[in-house]
Amino acid sequence: MTTSGILTLSCPDRPGLVHAVSGYLVTVNANIVESHQFEDVGERRFFMRIRFDLLDDATALETVRTGFGAIATTFGMEWALADAGTPTRALMLVSRLGHCLNDLLFRARTGALNLEIPAVASNHDDLRPLVEAAGITFHHLPVTPTTKPDAERAMFELIDELGIDLVVLARYMQVLSNDACARLAGRAINIHHSFLPAFSGARPYHQAHARGVKLIGATAHYVTPELDQGPIIEQDIARVDHAMAPEALAAAGRDVEAQVLARAVKWHSEHRVLVNGNRTVVVR
Image (cartoon, rainbow, N blue to C red; front, side, top):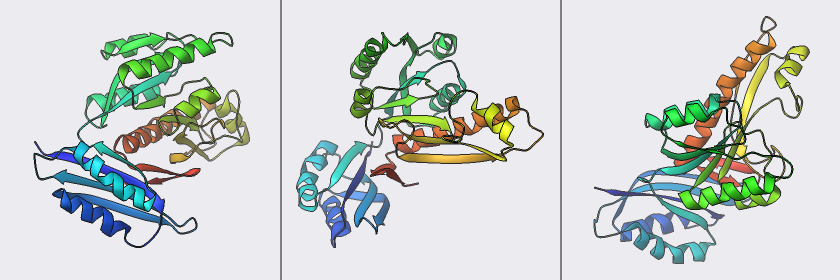
């Protein structure tokens, strides 16, 4: 069976980067099957994603990783090398709304996502039947002002115990602490309706209806201590009109949220998202 790797990197832009990376892969008998690169001209920063097959069965990805370290140091790279055949292990955080979770469970089960979901955690018990029907362990972690530190501690115990790579806030209606955000930097994705900040707070779709909006949308982004301000991975919209009641707006919004979150999770799990300050480079 062919071993495939995905190399992602970013560094200050300078001549010879592509030659150095591709030249090294030649030395380990790797065949490049997909390559994307991007230069942020304003910041003079270079981004690259390469997928390759190792043609020599005797060469392991760990050997490739060790050898590439010298090149990364020379060019000041931030980089990662992943096994393309290893699914991303994701912990889902939910509250009472199940549309995003249900969509992700279906996509993972049918192989549409490079994802394994070993557990779901929630501050409510409402979605337990859905999760357990899918054969996945459900963890009820109640959150109150006094129990929030204990809930986050239990969440990180799950992350460590299950070898979690990614945390997905699939309509998890709790704000993570600054410490939790810092520990999960670059590996926690949240979804919210794009009315923020114009329609923040309770009943956003009723607020939107009262203002006669013509577009609704959703944004998926990495979690940061600044609420809903993390680097954006994906966004989308749906057109609505005056004839739609708040409930119809909410239903359309749920569809957009599920699709946007699924695309963000898919791209992250395929190592297609590179963080660029408060923005992202998404290689599709």
